[in-house]
Image (cartoon, rainbow, N blue to C red; front, side, top):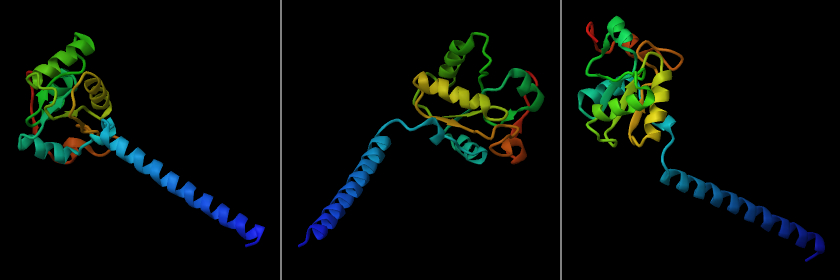
Length: 163
């Protein structure tokens, strides 16, 4: 074997070892990532799925918009109303959310607001407070950048004149 052949063989072995190391690190990252807590982005559901899961009792649907919005547009059928604009601030909101799920922070809930911004914030706050199964209807009630929303999809709405 010449020196040149030997050098090529050694370089080839190192390339193979680097590929194996990279593949091993990627596999470890996947396994460790799967074992950890999923990111909030993974808990996004469509309005149709939220409606179906609410009707079957799989999730508690919670509208986090303001009482004025509820009066003006109604609320998704079956939704509980817990405004993120609680007079007690986020502390009051968290207390009201805990009451809405009877203190069960593991109970699956689906949050909806008008366009997905407040529900995204609420999802983050609830996750930090220990709620473990918080889904975000990111399209919102009236629609926005993530889709047409609850109303335009023709999903059921209940009036709420006394909210």
